[in-house]
Length: 400
Ligand SMILES: [Mn+2]
Image (cartoon, rainbow, N blue to C red; front, side, top):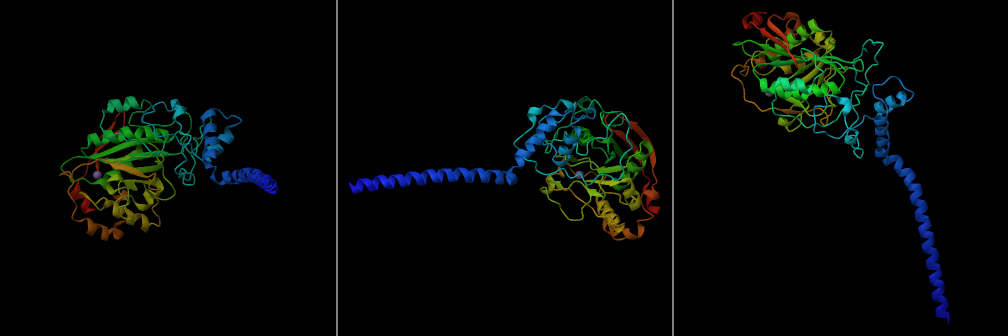
């Protein structure tokens, strides 16, 4: 009898304990969730912003909700999953089902505090383009097979003669000249343009592409061609920002903005050829960005580097001697593929490069953009780029 009573008692106690535990667990879960989600709820917050981006007019006239739209875009730019189609020639047709709601942003777009200082004058009928371009994709699949210039134009039908473009629905915040020193690399140029034009359009930049070439037999002078590109582009349009771009570097991420921040910027930070690591700390070659003002203060590149090597290390010295620091975006963003190639005969390694770098300090103010001597053979405003062919007289340049 007593044992039966005891069993019932024990069962009762067990039942009550169980119920208490379950209730307690439920309360703990509720409390914990409300706290934890505050810290780990980034994805939820992010998704909320994406849906705002999806449903509000992007370039429409000022609507009641436009301020909240701008705010949400400024805080967290929308991330659209990597799309195979690199040519959204009509970018407004991006399928919203491509928006990958579960992915968290790998990073916040770095341009927010790094805009060029002067805001362009507003055209009264159009708003200024958003601070963070809303249609950026992030990591991109790159095209590495050359297609014809006709096809590049077909894929980018809004291009103006000379490879010029500006956003249709807003006033661009940046006027950018892309300067490409060039000699006999037509397939590289095709591959680059095919990748670059859609990226620049998505970045909402007012830009032009200038391919600067020099006649044979003079050894290639990359630095001087960049100086010439700077000078000639300024005769054509009021550019405020200059991107000096090797023809064989293909950007892999459209968040690597082709704009000029407050300091000269080295853009090709992570290149596949160098295992996506910076080969050495002071490197400034590949792709780099300077404002017109910075470039003039530095006196451009040295004109004396004929043949391969040294000119960008010289430039790094010039930048630092004028009190600037070189800045870089993170390796996640500033990524490039290099098209493989062999060294050309007309671009031999320059044996004088070390001597030139070591004596650069004394020449900086008299060798550069203020001492440019060249002849323009022709300028062609081609459908996808401006071609500038020059002749450089090496003897004359070296005589100073
Ligand atoms: Mn190369």
